[in-house]
Length: 418
Image 1 (spheres, rainbow, N blue to C red):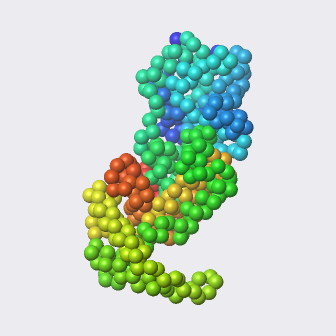
Image 2 (image 1 turned 45 degrees about the vertical axis):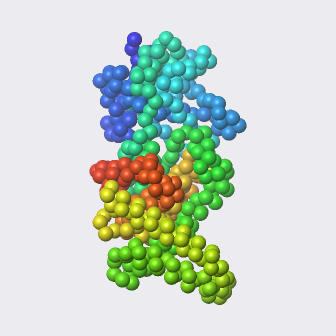
Image 3 (image 1 turned 30 degrees about the vertical axis):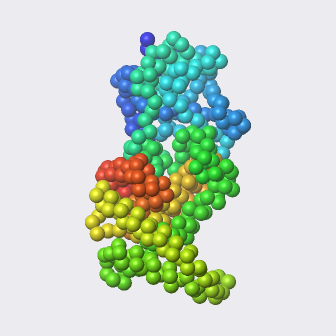
């Protein structure tokens, strides 16, 4: 059985200057050019395919499939189901949204009311037509069965066209690279579709409680707030920075713990502080509460030093270096939140770009290099989730960090930090 062109032809001629947006489209085009349908289907099976859906119906019932079918005069009857690989997706629009599925899902889920043709990347040089109805779909469906579910393992992927590779937007996107490389998404896809519109909304609600444009705006502001990081973590790290500055470098852990006790006991009697409303004093803290605070922060000092020791062993920190701040934990997620908000249509592309740029600027104000930024981000993630188990919350970041610090195409090697 042959695949590819409908009776009217095999799609457009290849433009002499056409650049495949990602390695996916490159592989599809090369397989198509040599009529290697096994290679073509295997490539499709390894990656998700996006298709347009009805936004109003998806909002009303996101648990169901709501495809929008298209029309192509080159096939009998004209009805087609257009699907796209990640690099061929259009920029997000308010009322045009996409979901994604695996090739196996398309092979198994065909209904008699569905179009007879599945069109991959319509209008592009890597376009192909797949007969979608059984028994025809069984042949290409076997490839999907053999490959299985598309992988979401860490991988550095970049948009060669349609995504910034230098400049302020690229810098801001690179601040979120630990998040997106971990999932195998293109690090520089500003026009983010992610897991598909329904899943992006679901993830924002489950992880962040964001269910509206207003909620997204509030969360974005909180992540970009320079005072928004955990105040206890920043107190401990800030105290060590002060000691290092005063004494010229290395800070003994025992001295750091003692300094925590001295500073907190000194504050327990109340302080005179200057606020936007004028000069005021803080209340006296009961002794038992002060001692509990001291014990908690000293325990945090121990956690930080043990994480840093592991960071040095795993190449995240150089010898004799320490984490200066965990603000990167917020700024990296702010870069991600901008893209997630766009994928869920809680913001526009210009708004998302602006937020990404601000995340990059905030990072540049707080850190000196990508390595310093990465260590701050990973420590914040571990303090929040890992509880010194050194489980996947940590090991995933080690794997992604190694990719970003070694792959020649990594933005951490190609985009200046400042």
